[in-house]
Amino acid sequence: MTNLILPLPKQTIAWRKAARKMSWGIPQDAFDMIEAPPELTDDDRRDGFIGTILSYGFGDDGFGNADTVLAGKLAWEYACRRRGVKTWQCQYVDFNKTKDIRLRPGAPVRPKGFYYAKFQPGGKYQKMNVSQLRKRLKGDTGCGPEGFQFLTITHPHFPKMMNERKIPFMSLADYDVAPYGFNDFFDAPQIFCSIGVLGLGIGNVDRNYPLFGIPTLRF
Image (cartoon, rainbow, N blue to C red):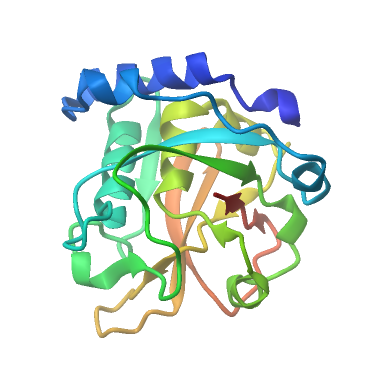
């Protein structure tokens, strides 16, 4: 699957296209400062990582880090506006209700601007639930906004592969969702593509969903 991760120039072009279409205001110097991506090591490959992805930290969380909720929201909005892309969204995950979605406690903060992460697509943990995975994480972490940006901006061929059942759907383990708005953070976002529709739903972190893998990142 390593050839499925696009080289940096193509990922950068995809970011330029999205930023221009959505008027995100990513400055030119941010693109100019993008450095060469880190290479995968033998250990990375043994652990299931298939390549390095380019993500972007939007906004500010009040502590000098990126606003991870905003970053996910903007990427999903881009998917909803792309020509030829049909989307569906569960009513219980709403980026505009910022008190009801968050980066999970203990997850690494994300930097502002462009950054890299090594990507494991999720099949490795398909028989595990999100809670179990979180307890096993050490240096790695789950996907937060990177999952949305990966599927909607830099690697839109992955949803097509989901639609053809060539790869599992994805649970984004670094987000918490409170579906009923009472600080009941027991769900995580799930992204899937079926019958040509890219869907955003949620799943209980203590339940296994056989069709869903859990992608992880290595910073």
